[in-house]
Image (cartoon, rainbow, N blue to C red; front, side):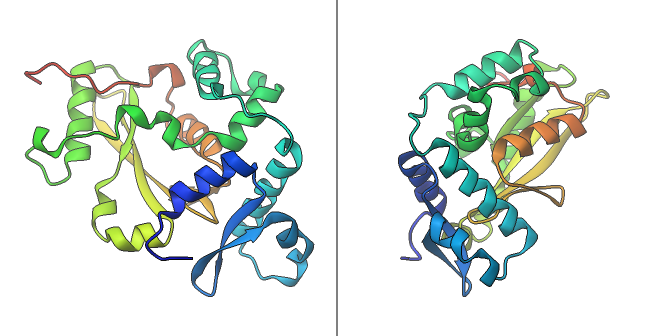
Length: 230
């Protein structure tokens, strides 16, 4: 594959179009495209890390269970409404819709509210963090949280793009009105990493991080609309 490609965007697009039939995996220090059936048929002959193996099996389950199902375009809205209403993950996990959300939802479904951070709105080099903190301070409510891009992506932009890796952050205000930041890493072919924990999918990463940080989903700030004098 061309090293100038955006593997994260391509992988997300292929997942929706082909329901997991194709998968990017690291092969000889490069991301290469494979058919999931062929990977599974030779899986005992390959050397996978535990993270890669869990990710491959997750994508295989996705293909087996959803290959002939039309993915509902508004699954995220359903999930958001359910969680904001206080429905527990335990209750949702028994539904078919939740299974689809777990396979297909990614951070892009939260992204419309932070993708357009304007560097001109901040005097800081790490403007993503600065603007996120302004939003949380303006809300001034303990337990509020939001998702954002991380400035770490600008450290080695070509490396992150060509290796299919990208950093994000979950920023929140704790009970003492202090703002905390948790780094999230997405790696194509592996899944998600948060605080040295591996997850096969974004939804598990998000929900477990919220739980460990004692945050409630319904306190998610879904818009970065700020007063002009903030």
